[in-house]
Length: 422
Image 1: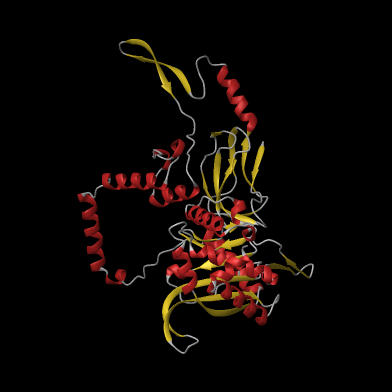
Image 2: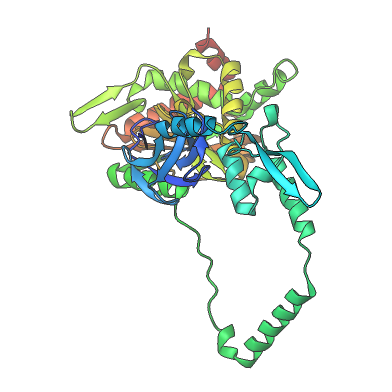
């Protein structure tokens, strides 16, 4: 008997939520077949069968939170071989098909009857979730993706067809009318407060735990600054014909340079050992908003990559984050995190640090504003607010201001930024 356990698939993972099973007790599963969907601290992932066998017992109910090391279900690998031996004793019978003798009033004839095993569904966890929310049996959906993979669009099209087929009947109208008449006769019924219950599970629950851990452990301090983005935006537009690079890529590159000058912000505090660990490389976390909630994919060794390389990786990671297609390695190991909330319209915020990091910087909306220049002239400039949140246990306000000023200088003078890359 094989015990399928929740194992640590990420950095420091301690527990996970069982979201959904793809199999039932008694099903025959193949090795590496997805069997259960889990929500970890940072992502939705699938657990696969370690071996071929029969699902003997499902031990954990859907929706339960369990610690790492908990046995989720049992697979009987020997049960598969016993079943095969029993089947071999009956001629013309196999797992995939059998020959059944059927008789009718005209005489005796043999018909081939096909019996299929559990259908292996090729679909991402996010696609499965959408199917559950829409009430769609994903086994009935035909996949149009690569190698027959079921996409979100496939599920949505199927749901639309089902909705058209399920037309409202006259009986339902009569029932609704009857309920309305009953409510009119009993006014007290109309006074009842309607409440929608949303399960506090999955990623939302994990985000809550992570944020609570950070805010209750770290003394947060926020330093805010204005940055004149006029010159960097002009430079970005000048090179646009040759290469179109997002402004966020410039943010990240300027930060890697600033972090090399102020490594105390690219660090982690180990309270047990009473030491501060300064990271040599910058692994930049990208706070990304998705339908499932916040997730932080990571650009590893961002300090060693060009602006163009950062741009390409940033685009790939954020797109896959929104489609729930990130691997555990891509969402762990960050040493500093950014939150680019400007495109959403934010003009200011006090973000929470991505524990156990020391700092996080948020970039807000860039707006054209009147500014008095060095010649006392009023000119229009593109101004962006930034917020640096830092751990006051590890460093102080003076360092925070100097670090932010270094970052500001690089963005306000693109030539200086380019010189740092030579």
